[in-house]
Length: 102
Image (cartoon, rainbow, N blue to C red):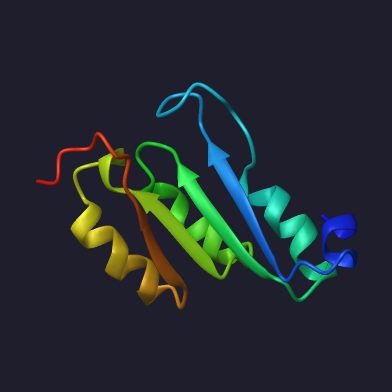
């Protein structure tokens, strides 16, 4: 992350995967918390996990500015987006092209 920021990036996008919603496993909130204090970049947590709701507050507390959830990651998406905003963060919604728009 330091090398990317030193090269001029001002936005860090981190894909968070749980091995359930998608097959890969990646970052946890503690990783974001460890790298966040070292810079002023905009931090974006893309939660590719199901359900995402239990992880919104930990990623907000870790210092992420934007928390993006997937429309297909759980039944509470309409409540999840305002919940992210209530944490003082920007909410994002990701849609898989094959996702039913209901």
